[in-house]
Length: 500
Ligand SMILES: Nc1ncnc2c1ncn2[C@@H]1O[C@H](COP(=O)(O)OP(=O)(O)O)[C@@H](O)[C@H]1O
Ligand SMILES: O=P(O)(O)O[C@H]1O[C@H](CO)[C@@H](O[C@H]2O[C@H](CO)[C@@H](O)[C@H](O)[C@H]2O)[C@H](O)[C@H]1O
Image 1 (cartoon, rainbow, N blue to C red):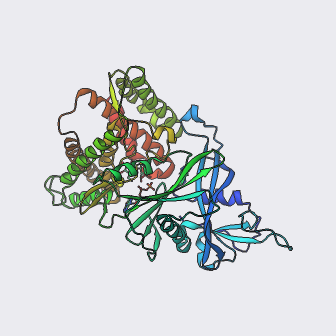
Image 2: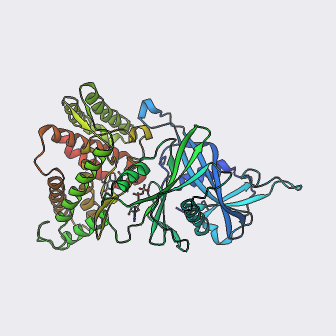
C-alpha cells in the first residue's frame, strides 16, 4: 500500500491526524478491519528512534493507533474485538521530502511529535510519511538492531531492541519493503535479514516471536532462524508489546503457493494427462511438506504444554466452531444454507472422547511455506490474524494445521482455473473436475506423509470439522478482502455442508 496521497498544500490541521491515520489504515492491505465501520479513538507513542528529523536523517515515531469498530459487534456477539491496536511507524522530517510524495501521511505539530517546543510564531509542522515506504527510515531499524547486538541501549525510550547471538548484520544492506504485503509489513535488508513489522498488536507475547525463538534454539530445520525482536513496555496496559521480529532471510526460497500454482498450470497445459502423469506433479513436494509439518508439531509438543481436552472442553471446541459459523453468517448470508450440515459436523466433535491439544501454527496454508535448497520451511506462527491474542496462544489440535493445508490444496487449482478462458460450460466443468483431481492427489500425498498411517475415526471427525471451520473463516476473509474469490470457500462448503 502507498500513503494517503494527501495534498501537501492543504492546511496542516485539516483533516486531523486521527482522520489521516484512519485514511492510511483503510487503504492498507494489513488493516484487518476492512469492510467494518470504525473510527480512530486514540493514538499513543510507543517511542522514537533514528535521526534528527533533518533532511535524509528522519526519525521514526512508532504510533499505536486504537481503532474502535462501530458496527455493534463485540466479543460476545462475534468473537471479534470491538477495539484493536495497530502499529503505524511514521518517518518524521522537519522539512518536506518531495521524493516521498506517494507515502505522505500529513503534518504533525512538532510539539505533538515530541521533538521540541512551539516556536514564538506558533507550531512548527513536521512532514510525516509512512515509514514502511521510506528506505532511509527503514535503515534506522537495521542500525538500532545492530547497536543492540553490541549491547547498546537506546537511551530515553521505552523501546527495546533485542538480538540473539551469533549473527552479524550488514549495515550497508539496502532496505526494501516486500511488495506482497500481507497481514504485516515485511522488509528485506539485502538478502541476509528480514524484518516483520507487526501491524495488529496486543499487549503480551507475540506467538510468531515466541515459536521462532523456541524452534531456533532447538535447531529446527523447518523455520528461518530468529535474529532478534523489538518490543516496548506499554504504560497504558503495563505490559510488553512485541512490535517487530528480525530473522534470517531465506534467499533460496520459493513460495509454496507459487510452486503449487505452477504445478497446476502444468497440468492444465496437458489436457490428456492426469495429475500424477505430468512433469510438474507436486505430490512429492506435498509429501515432504507433510513430513516437515509432522516434525514441527513434534518439536512444539516437546517445548510447549500438551494437554487433553475431554468432556465439556471438547464441547467448547465444537461450540467455538458453531459460534464462528453464526458470526460468519452475519457477514455473508450465503453461508446460511450450509449451516445445518456444518452444525452436524461440529456436533460430531462434541461427542468425541479425549482430544489431545498442543501448540500449533494456527493459520497454515501454502503461502506460509517456503521451499529452499535445504527443504521446506514454515513461516508466520502468529495464528489467525482475526483471533484475539489470548486464543492464538492456546493449545489446539494439530488437525487445525493439517486442515489449513488441505484447504490450500483446494484453493490452488481453483485459483488457476479461473484465470484461464473457458469458451463453454463443458470446458469449465472439465477444468473443475481436473482441479479437484489435482487437489485430491496432493491432499492425499500430504496427509499420508504427515500421519504415516491411516487416520483413526476420531481423527477423521476432527479433521473434517477443522476443514469446515477453516472454510467458514475463509468465507469471511474473502468477503472482506477479496470478494471475487468468495465462491472458492463457499463451493467447498456446498460440498461439505451439503453432504453431511
Ligand atoms: N525468512 C524468510 N525469508 C524469505 N522470505 C520470507 C521469510 N519469511 C517470510 N517470507 C515471505 O514473506 C511473506 C510474508 O511473510 P509472513 O510471515 O507470512 O507475513 P504476514 O504475517 O504478513 O502474513 C511470506 O509469504 C513469504 O513469502
Ligand atoms: O497469510 P496470512 O496470515 O495473512 O493469512 C490470511 O491471508 C491468506 C491469503 O493470503 C488466507 O489464505 C487463503 O487464501 C490462500 C490463497 O491466497 C489459500 O492458499 C488459503 O488456503 C486460504 O485460506 C488466510 O486464510 C488468511 O488468514
